[in-house]
Image 1: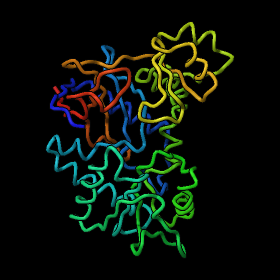
Image 2: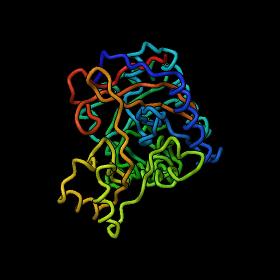
Image 3: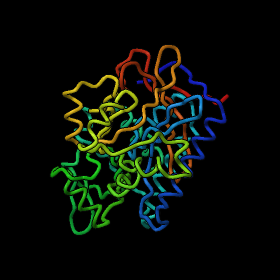
Length: 318
């Protein structure tokens, strides 16, 4: 999960990432009245000789607290707590209680981070529970876990639109504004749905930092197959490198499956390498501002946490 490698990134590259993030926020222009801005947006970049390239945005990016502790950044931990308080305050709520929600959370890879968050929040006087969505109750306009009335849900579910039946209670509570849900389906649609990259990569103010991206359409299959070695195929609403394919590795059978699915094709931007690992750079962002920069190191076709010596790594500017 954590790597001992220190990834050194030139300061101009860090500055260009921050500038692109600001530009994207300006294009999206989320209304200031929005009840939640979304905690832990992860802007993931590959570093290239012509500058950083944004590969995707995640609206429930994990690992921030682990990365902050690895870097010894107690100031960032304080900023994280302030961020959650700000999310509650935007909805006119004091933050007295919080639920970290995921499917069977104790089985999740990042469950140790959930425990670390619970400890952090409780040290700041915020009652915290870690629970499955099946534990949630909506009653008389309030949101509950057993006898605890919940002010805010830190949403770690990968059902980003809360469409699964098991998440119906949480979705209804979000729609009824009975609880602050952060991040939530609205924010996912605005930021993390990969179909957004199609428009952004053609936006003059953004295109320099975003690889050209296009919708996969069956009628364009012949052209996409001919250009496949320069493309990376991703499901529009996927996560965690699941069902993603480098075009130079894809088989005809899998390609035909991709043509029938809801995919985007992104210009292939190979990651940089360091000490035998592939590297991507994640900017953890709140309200358009970068709170922490960390790296992820891996070997293989897609980002993973199965490589010995890989995982989250500390970033130093040079």
